[in-house]
Length: 341
Image (cartoon, rainbow, N blue to C red; front, side, top):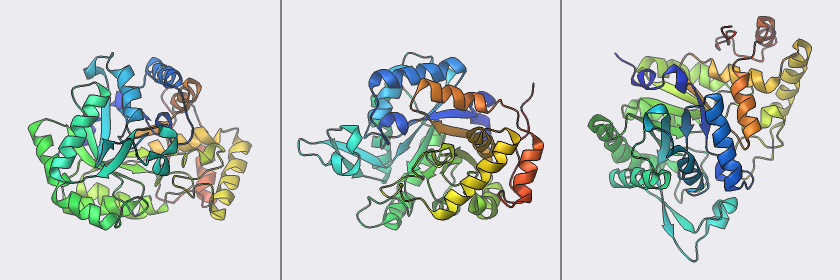
């Protein structure tokens, strides 16, 4: 059976720039800063871009679109998310959910068949392009805190509406592939039983800090179902590279003690081998056998250049061997191979 995602995510699309940071998730950035980051990404060879209506309540899509609509559409891979629509309102409550976005909109959750078609149409208008390659059903996951009645209700709506609608849109050629984009493994396991996704965005679940569940529970089913993954948040929202936050959400500055202790152990071993821990983390997450791409967030030209170059940096094989010996990497986790000279 053909793996649709591996046909779409060609080697030039295996590294992507995501839109979280440029949607002002963590801090405010100017349009000029965003344009410079996108220009730098394109200059070093990034040709895969992943956005979402949620990122800045439309801000990331507008910023990415401002840059991408001047490029040839066939030269890059573009994915976005569905399930969240916006309604402009003078009395909007964006500040309660996404304060740095400065959005005039209120959010409407809609995982119905009509809702996802509307979502794709709205995204194309914000982006200023004529097509998406991949659509991910966004955030139908236990960690998403803003659903009025819990994630299971929205998942059930998506199972009956969004999932079959996206399969139909794929078969009609409107999109090339679809899946879900979430931060926990349970919804990915469920959608592989309930529908026929091609590729899922697996965020924050496969990192040097936290990967046991992905390796031992999620990946075996992904292989069996002939689905692929795009790996996101390899740095756990910057935590591995020194950020004072861990993953996403309002409590992301409350960092689990176990995560801090593991980062300290990883840093100590990396120091002995002269390895940059951020570089090791990116290479580790990109090496999963079920992964067709790694998507990173970047807030500046310098950051995306460093991340891109990290994948071409040689790391001693003894470093990875020691991490396994010390129990810091799962025994059956894939180990990165050094890049070709």
